[in-house]
Image 1 (spheres, rainbow, N blue to C red):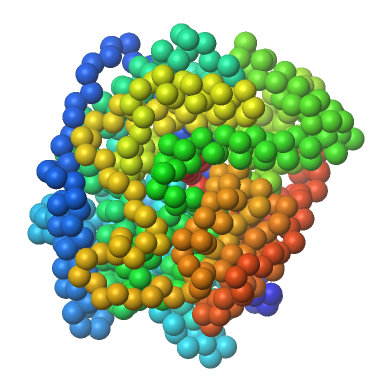
Image 2 (image 1 turned 90 degrees about the vertical axis):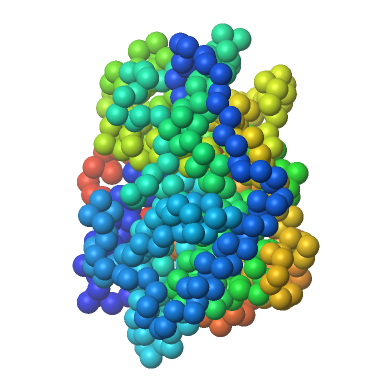
Length: 586
């Protein structure tokens, strides 16, 4: 986040950016594909019910007590007797100096000595460059839920993070159920229930909706069958308990945390439940934490947010009609996209890209403006008779099938366990039909992604935490004021619309600050795109100083139009940091 650049680190920096870029591109692509939903099942069986273990409030209190016991046990260990860091699992492809450790936590914190599950933790120690004093560990969660943060310590090699990496151990982790030795699963990725491109009608018919209901029931049933009673223990409260134990395992009396997207909700719930254990907290691209919006209404809010951001892409492409030839107005560019959609519905591009794959690929344009040039160029090439670029950008990667399935399983479990959802399809149909009239781009894809929550087999759902309420603190902890926190948001973010940042800041109190990137909409603001934003974040993490109640930064520049021929002449810039990776997150 600083501006210092040295030629001595240029080669390492290039390698790191390449690794991060590959992680970002692969993860974003595979996770966008989760919007397609499961294929319909030909045989609809009753969904088995998974008990959550008795009275919900009593179980939650026991789980909180169990987490406190686990954290205190770790805190009493001698220095150096905590996590044993060594080489990282080969599957993670994390180069030296990143080291990894395994943290075992209770599956059910109400039974702290019961079955355990492993969490993989990654770390690069503080470098101390420039004589910087070590300030502890900075723990990162990239959101999702369902995304892994194990890549995070790689940013230590980037100039933008040099001063932060000098003062902090950079720590990432894979949350419970994400990858590693105990991945959550709802269906067998090696035996897909369908082959070929996935259809996703722009305006689903009654028959399409019936098929999606059957698919949602089948997916929920698969989660119960493959996970059993463990399914109930993938939730935000359990993720918060894991974070509390991880803090203690790292030897930190107080948590310094950076969360993106869903990670902001995780951080906000942690701050509410454990205010006395918070040191500093950066919350980037904020989820609206209002309990009335967790999670059904937050997902409806995304429809309008993504429509606005989709129009930003169409407007940009129209301004560059001379390069792409897609039309001189947003409406004309939209018509060009619809011609492509109609064409792949009739004959999938390359035999593998149908309307579902197309939707997933172009949803990324509503998340990250860095992909606008290649997405516009792919539409242009397709309409000129060359489907190759579109096929390359939108085709599913068979090698990532297991990761996609795992990410969707964790996402679904946390979303569905966290709060009650409407159980009546008529409610979903009414709300999404109304929304799709004004926001057609992403509404139905998002609805079908989340529809398993209508048929979720866990009997006892969590009740959303009232973020910011003192009454929501864990019983038994000494009352403590929450220190100053830093919320960061892009004004036109579609995945986590801006009103959510305002609500989060309001709930975190008068000591919280909000840094807004005005006029921009890339999801995930921190990390090398906007020097103004990064300066505020760096200053806060290094000194604890917040920049004032609300400050505004000018937007980062929009991408320059680049044709496919131009891009072939050399590699494009790799994004500095993978952003929150799992759409739709809320």
